[in-house]
Image 1: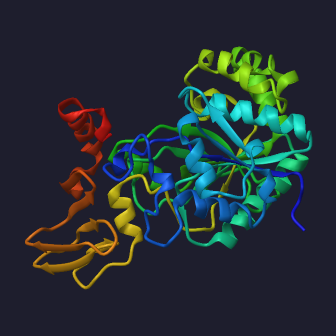
Image 2: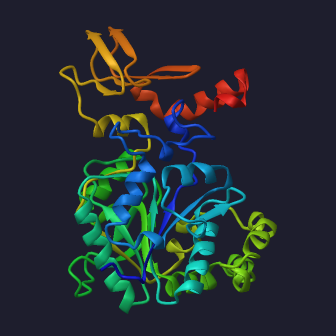
Image 3: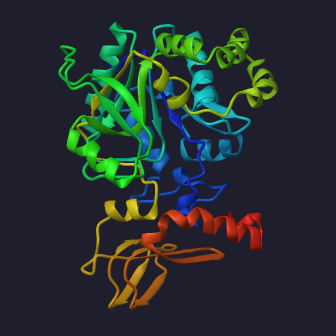
Length: 363
C-alpha cells in the first residue's frame, strides 16, 4: 500500500533547446521518446515516481501551452494534478505555488520535486533513496536533495559540497555546506580530489511545512504573493487568482531562492546511475552503439568510414553516411542538423540564428 502522504511535483515546463531540432517550444524534449524505448521521457518519469507515490498524488507542473500534451501522454491524470504556469518564472515560484496547494490538501504531505526529462537506470535504487529522504523529512525540519557521485570533472553541472566531518547517525544523510556554481575545469578537478562534492541533479525532497517555512524566511515577498491566494487554492477561483498574480513573481530558481540561503539542507549521495539528458552528446552516451560506435534512434543506417555519430530520424528512414566522425545528424520534418558533437553547447545559438533568418516557427 503506497503512503497517502507521499506527493511528487514533476517539473515539465522546460523547452530543452539544446535538443533542437527535435525539441521545440511547441513540443519540447520531455514529450518525445528520446531514447527510442516506446515511452516519452515524461511517461518514463511518471511511471518511475508511481512505484513509490500514489498516482493521484503526482502533480505535473508545466506551462499552459503544454496542457494538451500532458493529458495526451498521461491519460490517467486529472485536471487537479496539472498545475499550469501562465508565465515562465523559473523553478521557485511554481514550486511554492504547488507546495501551498498540496499543503492545503494534506498538511502532512512529503514531497519530491523531480525533473521530467532525466534518465535513471536503477529505478528501485531511486525509490530507496527517495524513501530514505522522506523518512528523514518526516521527523526533521529538513530540505533534502539527491546528489550524484561525480565520475569526471564535469563543468556543465552545479556541485553540492557536503560536510565530511558531521555524521548525522543516518548512514546516507549528509549536511550540506554549500552549493557551488558550474566550475571551470581546474576547479571541477579540485572538487573531485577533495571527495566531498556531488553533482546537483535538481531532485529535492521535503515536507510541505518545511519548504513553505523556508520560503517565508528567505523569500518573504514571493511567499506573500502566493500565500494571498491560499483561500482559493483547490477551488474554482484558483485559476483567476493565478492568472492575475503569477507573472508578478520574481524569476528565480529554487537553488538561489531557498536552498543556498538555508542552513537545514541535507544531501543523500544517490546509489543509481543518472544522466540529465541535457544534450545530444549525453543522449549518445546512454544509447547502445553499433560496431562503429554510432548511436542510432529510429533510422535504418548504412555507414562507411563513419564513427561516433549520433543519428536520429523518423521511424525507418534510410540514412547513408560516409566519412563523418563524431557528428550529430538529426532529421526532423523541415530541418536537417549536421553538427559536430564537440560544439553541441552551441546548438542554442544556432537555433537563435535559424529563427532570426527563417522565422520563429522553426524553434
